[in-house]
Image (cartoon, rainbow, N blue to C red; front, top):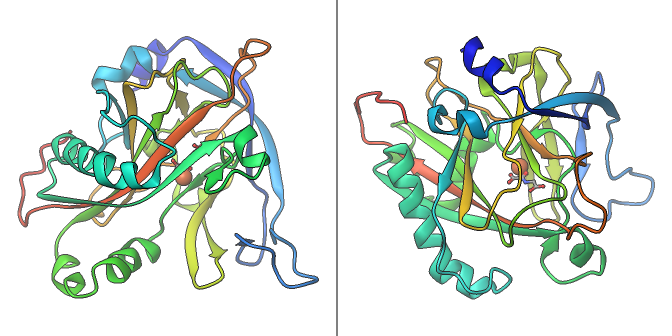
Length: 284
Ligand code: OGA
Ligand code: FE
């Protein structure tokens, strides 16, 4: 609602990186590409973008409307850099969280990334940098493909019913003062803003959306997120009935970052959320 948006008066203006106009399908390499092939076939368009404080709206946000919500709930994980502990302790916590928040009948956590700029730059194993590009993790093609790849035996049955891909993004340490995550109200993204982009891995090609700039897009963030808070972010929904399907997001350099602020450390877990057939469309 416009009134909600107007109430989010606090805002920062930061440069967001978007996909510049292109006539061929964009391709990004997640590894060192063959000689002569650029890591990215596409160009970046930098646009100063207003990013609004979503905290005043937090209680009214909905996964099915804006495509993202804020949850206040801690984790019992002691070390998010420990892959085993994350899979053993955090995945089940995330599955419960997404189930409760979305009303899904079954939730399957299948992947995660830990991010910290300086640790990634030092080459610490498995740690990535924040993603400073506006993007959405799944497309009409790669959403269902993920179900087929991960749950081959059940995929045909599962794909008969509604399902979603929901990310759970949490600071490892709070407050986040550097490189926060911005999320775009899914209602303000026009279909042509979402451009299918190949992501080349050594063993497979994934497909994500790059985001083209459109001044109608409304961006939000949660300032100073704490480790007992998480953003749930819907990156795919099989339902084509007006609810949020693709929620673009990306990290940004916050002009309010105090000098010497610690680098952001975060974890995001990706989940598949399967809904019972003929579920009432009560929105969450
Ligand atoms: C995500 C994501 C980027 C970041 O959670 O899907 O793109 O910088 N995160 O945390
Ligand atoms: Fe993402």
